[in-house]
Length: 306
Image: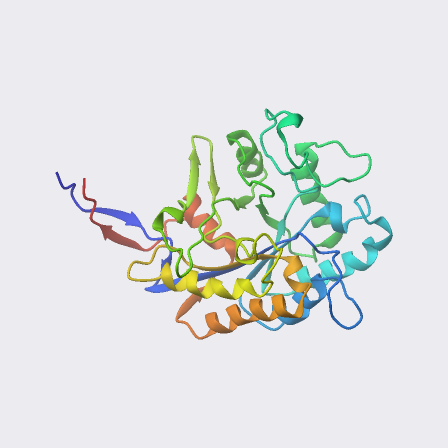
């Protein structure tokens, strides 16, 4: 029996236009780019994306890659200088991608069941979730963020499937959280079963899923077709009509700055987005809508058939 039409929030849309977001996980910041001078991969991202495209960006770092207490203490000062330039840009909001990039966010999982261990192999470090969340937020705020700006959002790492207590820990710091979800559809592989929900709801907290998967699946887990992320245009088009299921969301890692071809693929997405009738917002604005922190969400009538 058909159910009655009910109003539902449309988190893809603002003032009739499709929302646009862009966010970067910090992975690969220390990688050397295949470009003149062999800069850190973050440098081409800074110059070729963040400064070139004036849309809102949400940018994160992994402290264990960039900071002096991490894996590359001798190179830390040079990397911190790049991170400070990124965070100082007026169109960039600051995010944390944790201290050691935990692969799991459930402390009930035994080490023997973790295929990749706990996290990045930082010398002398034992996984500590307080250090991962609170510690890196404090490091970024005190050492990398310019005056008047602070971390506003945590981007989950690894499997990005935190248990409720982890999500609540982030919320208790006054931060939003995003990542998880694996929405991936392209031409020839466009089943709607591969479109994940927008949130994971818990009684005490809400995890906001990334609207669309990052470049990993487009590049076969970064093993080939390093220009493959350009196919995300197909994803945005397939999820935009005939029904708008997701916003346009360019989500990637710092290592997309490693190869000229991967950087060009990334730039092609921003060039495509610039030609579309979109409403650019920071990822935190999108996350607030889904977390129920603001009433200013477009509403449309959804007909539900049972």
